[in-house]
Length: 151
Length: 151
DNA sequence: GTTGTTAATGCGAAATATTTGCAATAATTA
DNA sequence: TAATTATTGCAAATATTTCGCATTAACAAC
Image (cartoon, rainbow over all chains, first blue to last red):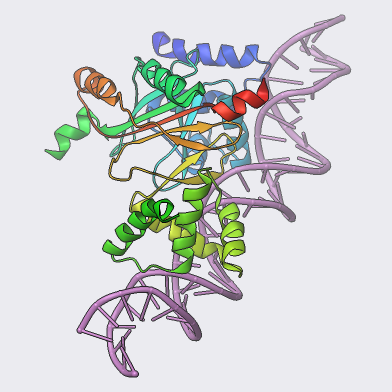
């Protein structure tokens, strides 16, 4: 129990250090995204967080909380083909790079803690004479659990 | 001149084979995105295409044309931090993978015709026991031209 | 604990972005 | 040239995101 909270507590501490105030909504969003590990839309977050807190949280508040979490690198955003933006917890905010595997069926996010981007960077630098500042790599497919179910 | 049209003609042919009708708006969008090689919003596209055709093209039409082009893999979409969706021509639609370098200053798109994704796929398969169906890799930085200007 | 400061929230409205239904138009096929 | 039907324009409906402002509440200082 205490161990489960360790990582979310680190995020909360990070926010506090940034001068953010720790409100029920902020705590709830961080803990919920941590627990679910599934990409969520703002609407979905509003519903889930309202449920957890027992009152209707305003959508504008969700947007503003996400803005702060994105700024601190705690949350990442992505869009599928449907164009709707989705958010998920980034377990390694200290690494600026985003490497995630997202199951196209259950939308669960899993970290991919390895990076082969130097290959790309080297290519770009040598051939395009450009510099790579950031890279965004998103892998999609079927997670182990959904693979079993589909067979 | 004729050579410049070769690639766009291939896209047009691809659309035709998919049962799409080749309208002035479709041709104009493909050729414009081909020529500019810069990511564009729907609003920007509406303005540019209207200018080129000499009459106001409806925004809904732009959305519907982009939808078809996305479906055929001729166009890719991306979003920067501002949340607005942007579209650009994908020069290698036959390759399902998207590998592009986008200049964060001038928004020019350049193809990166190499792929190191097998490394990621292997990792995901061996460690997460998941299968990678598609991957989306986007590199951002300063292009050669903008590098010179910034110095 | 109490108080002061000010970030965060709720609320409503506005600004943007995207989709949809339907009639008119125009691209293609025969 | 005529028939078929995808595409477009238009207007309205949805959906998404932002903003201003009054209120609330987090938290630092006492």
